Amino acid sequence: MYPGRASSALPAILTGSLLLPYLLCCCGAIHFDALALVRLASLALAISLWYVILPAAMLLDAAFLALIGWVTLGHYFDGIYPRSSASTWTSSGRSACSMSSRWR
Image (cartoon, rainbow, N blue to C red; front, side, top):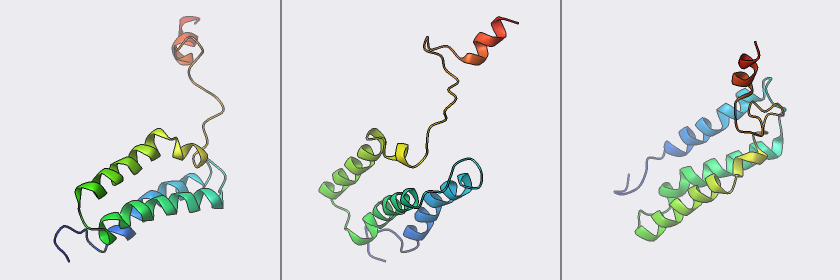
């Protein structure tokens, strides 16, 4: 192993840890979508292979943080994990559960 580089087992572990929750959700909670699986696998490989292939350098570290920010702020997972159709929040911002308990 090179100094400053990640282990060669890291891509398999990270890819599995990103794909396993999706595959478990497909057992009943959501419908399986092959494109969503490909999107998850590509993200997992990009993140996990980043420091295996590329050396640790300040510019590459900044690019990695930008990638993580883009995934988080760009709603990358919205196309993979669909939102629930029944919302527990009302338009006033209060929980539907707390509102229903008030009327008992």
